[in-house]
Image 1: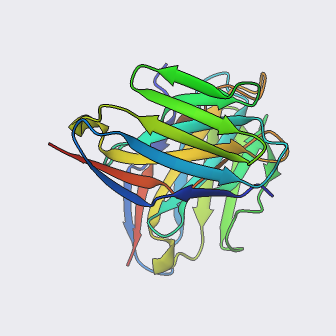
Image 2: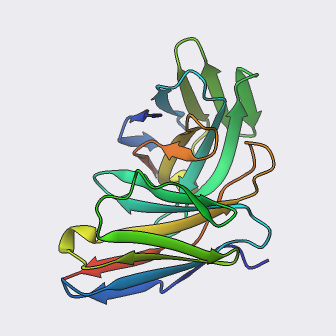
Length: 115
Length: 112
């Protein structure tokens, strides 16, 4: 398995533009997570899905952020409109649902810069 | 919801010394505590974890201890090497037992 796949790896955009980040979880994994990493806040949980259904989006910072998971192998995180303070590394992660102790695997991340 | 505090935020040691990173959590129902290592420019990767039914776990030079009464857990690295330099994150499962909540990370620097 190729692991969790994210695209793009780097994104530079201008304030006000729409940004879409993509994630493909490990095949067979039931949970998918979106995290944001900054120096100030560390790894923040934004939203997570179980079997494609959003379970908890309380970490989504504003209405400008939205996430979808149309099928078991694909998820998107969209920011519209983007702002400079959204600049961060966004990680997607996935794990099996069986039991609570299965390892959570991270993707390589998308480094977002909003100018 | 679950809240995880991690200290120190930065830690510098000499090669061969030991390093200790400490975390506290808020939800007494949490029962799983992993530690992740993130090298510069890379993704976080699991290095060791501990469940609430044990107090200590060791894997070569790294060990984790858990004190459920005090709601804190620690990572111990012995005989540190330059390749141990990285950011280390502790985590605890959220109240629902479904998602990991991370501490803010500790940047460990090991100088030779």
